[in-house]
Length: 314
Image (cartoon, rainbow, N blue to C red; front, top):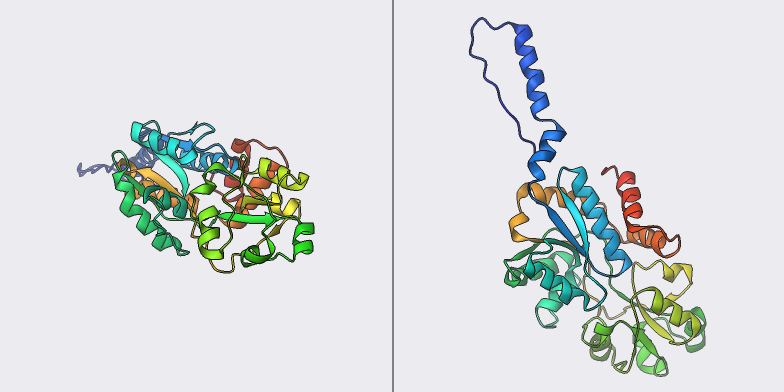
């Protein structure tokens, strides 16, 4: 935590040790958390959240975690359509200056789907940082967390057993009758329809567009679709006993959660504060947090507070 310390030099030769001790107490008061908070509050942090549960939870985690370290931070919902495009426009307009992002997906958004993302989180984030300066006044990706949320192709247990489906490689021969349900950008996302075609020779271009998360899970359970694209941290996979098809040819890239911030915020002290929060995020933790939202119907702000309290970040 970056603190502002005032040093008082006592030059009067006759000053007693008692008064000197009092001077030390005054210095402690000057460096109190309240003083530190006042200094940091001059830089408001506005965190954009996309319209799905995990983004909402992550935005609250970073906002509350930064507040606890003396920053002024708030969450700004970005609406329900064209997720990342709306976020980038908000960055350019200056209405947000922070967003919890996903390294591989953000990179492929900015590089026009060149396929530069790999399974290496650091290498993918480093590559992302070569594109981010072109957005508005410039953005920076900080350290990626250990939490990975990538596309997960799932089927029901019955479908898996009936067709013998266990991996994405099986789709080319055993999955031709499957009906895919996915979000709108699956058509251009290299980790979705294009990747299935390129890596697994499976054509699902004629898929059903559905809302992310629960709408897809509900359609799969009801039989309206027979394969769905969920997030790998979606607790519904475990709750509904869906079978996650193994990515046996490593199509999916490193979609680690990574904070993306305006370049002006990227000071050593701020990066340290953000990285302190990111270090506590894991895939397993995100599954638990998402379950609280999906199953327990808890509010994102309440979920975030519980997580930060457990991790001793509040």
